[in-house]
Image (tube, rainbow, N blue to C red; front, side, top):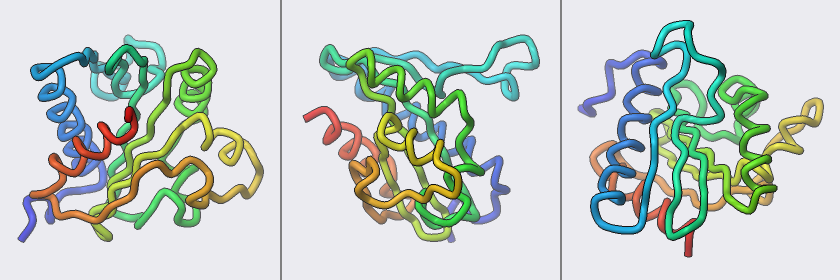
Length: 166
């Protein structure tokens, strides 16, 4: 049985954010990566303004935002309603603005039910997000997609993240 099997949706999302942080911690220890966790109002109390993403950083000289979305409901960010349920307007806008500044705004998606891991270019996702009844397809910014167990997630997350910057 998976260590995430009994988690609620919120717990699973927090767990996935933690896995993303572990991945970034490991990359920062090994080489040219710097990042900072941006805590949101839910985790830090109502004293903070809206945050652009969960993480902001630089990898090999290229700036990035990383928004981590874990779900127990949706199989993919392409699933009906998933994109608008999971993402907020300011997060998608921040990804676009990071792209405009020649960085990259990433959305990391993890589904407990399908075991899918998806990495999306948020700057490309934005126009679809802003289109009424818009629905994502792989051509709309899907950079990496793989299926892996929870035990394999950290390795696959690291490999996928590094693939973005090649």
